[in-house]
Amino acid sequence: HIQAIVDKIHEKGLSGSAMKNAVAAASSIFSCALKKHMLNDNPCDRRRIDYPESAESDEKLRFFTAEQVQRFLDALGKPLVIDHPETVRKNGRVIPAWTETREINPQWQVFFYLAVFGGFRRGELVSLKWSDIDYKAQTVTIRRAARCVQGELAIKSPKTRSGQRTIVLPAVC
Image (cartoon, rainbow, N blue to C red; front, side, top):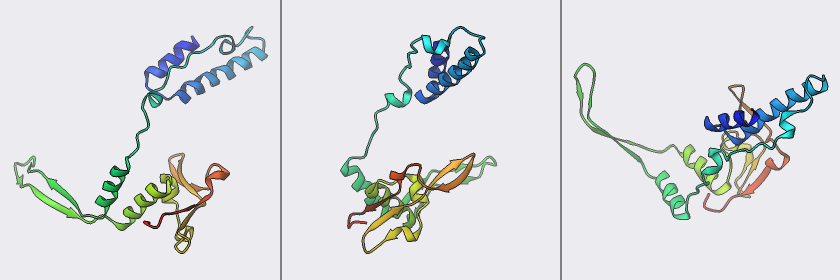
């Protein structure tokens, strides 16, 4: 029966950790029943559970090539051109096709340069303060990270001690 639960979780496309967490929860319940002499053994212990590979592990991590990174960073320095097609509203009014040109906010340019050249995570980037940047030494110090806690944005220390670090950036930044 435990294997059927694992298979059902896999069919729903949930992660491998979701499968293992479900088995751990079931095992904990069975262990309590075992201690109270309600069961003779823990079914999670006596069976080898086959964990199918999750969809996450099927996908290979994909990275930009050096050429793609260069094209992306070059595009950040150019205006964004958006072509809007002709649109017919519900009332029959026709809005003709038009082209919109927008400048890319320098804040986004900095965000992506730091992501590319510093390898920072999104939560680390959005929690940076100006005091974390040393322009003379060309370093950025990670002291905190943003993450979602119970649906709210929380800025806290990185999860591990190694998460607090100082990165030297290349001159291009």
